[in-house]
Length: 372
Image 1 (tube, rainbow, N blue to C red):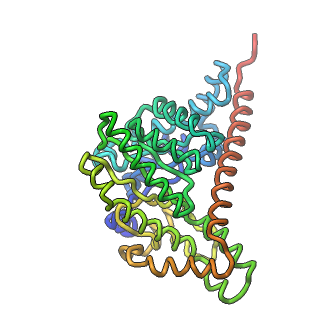
Image 2: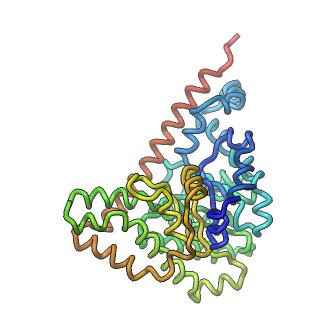
């Protein structure tokens, strides 16, 4: 048990691990992180699975069976990834039960190639929920324009959702609206709202990476002084928006019917710039009823030397707005930055998915039984 991680949890931040692999499950490592480092959830994405499947022999037995059945590479990936998510969900089930369903959850993402197809995204979300078949699963849907109505529809079916790839405040408000619309649909269908949960994954470090690059291009002292401020400002203003929406009359009516708030989740919290403290996007984003999903290196850094000083978000909104306004005055367009980041985010996950297809296909061919 560590003081920093314990304190973070006590401040209302749920610690989730942004990683999963067969080895992490079978070695007992995941159970150890839950037991000793306050980890209460797991997130996955195509990049994480691509890395897991391409390293080591942990998947050979299942791949060999799949090869013998001559399944398609897409089916093989679905069988492998849902098996990992199902097993992780079982390990986290005691946390799920102890927190009334709020934590103890594992996220699995819809095929990123469907990011701009609303109807296919809904169909995929239903299929994943059916395949994993665990109440403590979250289906990840990207917050693209096509993803927004898909989120409402999936929530309206009673399926819990992790909305991913949120970069802009405007899109985040659309995500919260989609969640409330989905809850209203679920209520009309007579579903139990207390069983539906959601998080909204607001990406952090990539905002600094993109804006710092533009600030470096400007090169003035004023520009240099703004390095490393945009991501925190953006996330803090997102929390302000969360507080507004989840104190509205519309929300209050749903809450009375048993609904759960959609928690903000800080994603992409590994620091990309070595000039910044490696716990920056943890210690500076402490606020009640949030989630921070961390790569293992960030979890270990927080454990080792993170200084948790209480709520570092509430009361910062005026300064956060001033920081973003200062960027606009320098000619850095917020709207352009968040658009670039969303497009890049979808492209990166698509590229990882394609890499996953290639490496899994190669493994299926390597492990295929000889004919005859």
